[in-house]
Image 1: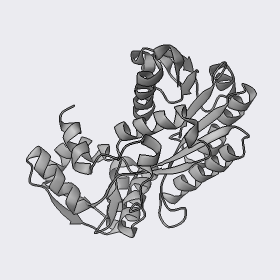
Image 2: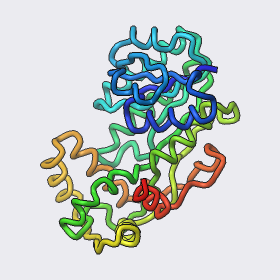
Image 3: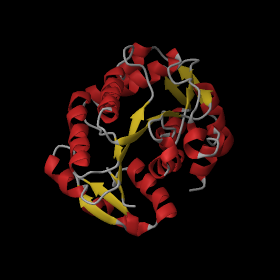
Image 4: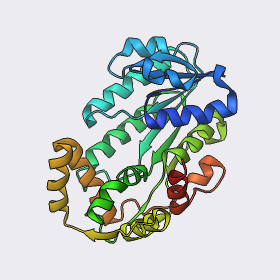
Length: 282
């Protein structure tokens, strides 16, 4: 069985590849990357695949049994057609199964909603493809907060518009385990899973970081408007609005949802503090 994973040079794609290798060996795994050189370190065959280039994927998916499509990072409307390029190439190559990394979230209420809507459209496209399929809806990654710890320490606080809302954070490592299982086991076919962990508040997140890293952070909430302005100044108009939209979703309880992780992965999701401890020891 030959498995292909797109966005192989990205953090999620490479994590999934490593998990699949453990189960079926390097010789059965193909990475697909826009810039193949950036994925060479994975030690598997890497084929070129730019989501904007249908011909790349017609070649890249030759001889593949199942493909994992990592959701693109472009603006929402562009993503839909980019993902369709992969779906069409999968069909023309008689790929048997497609697994998609979608996302949890609200389709209407925040600046993150257009991204969620584009993911839902790709979910429909995959369900209507005629191929076997499985879809994971990723929770919010905890890693960006951990990568940002130095900044939090300088300021002495975590500040955003999440308020008292709880977010069922996940991690790329946990997702890699779930997606490897979804790719390789037919029991997951025609299933949509919410791949999230335990719901925690921003205050709890600060407390967990303090416990593991011996810091003294406090959580200070700000308004959605104030946080949006601050994020746009640092990250630019599009990404700043998206990040602020995610935290507005946290404040609304959008990511405080039941988890299907154990159904997908075959084991419970690690707790938030376990993930933070694991990150520290990496």
